[in-house]
Image 1 (cartoon, rainbow, N blue to C red):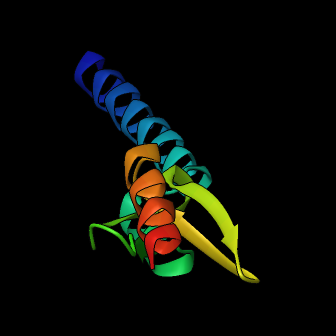
Image 2: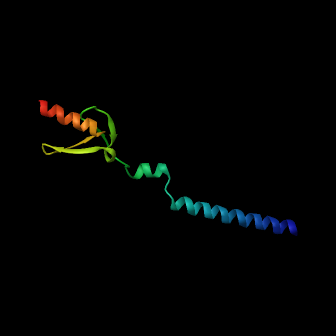
Length: 86
C-alpha cells in the first residue's frame, strides 16, 4: 500500500513538473524562434573602410541627401575629409 501511494505521488509530481516546464517554454522565446520571426538588426557596409557592422552601432552622417553609416567616428571623419579633397 505504501508503495502504491509513493508511486502515485511520484507520478503526480512528474506530471506537475512537466506541465510547469511546458508552460515556461511556451511563454519564453528561444533563440531559434526569434531568428525565424524577426531580424535583430540590419548589417551595413562602411563606405570608407568597407567593414560590415550592425546599423544600430554605426555613426550616422547625412550627406548630399543620403544617410550614411560608419563603423566609427574615425572612418566618418576620414570619409568627409576625402570628399572635401575631391
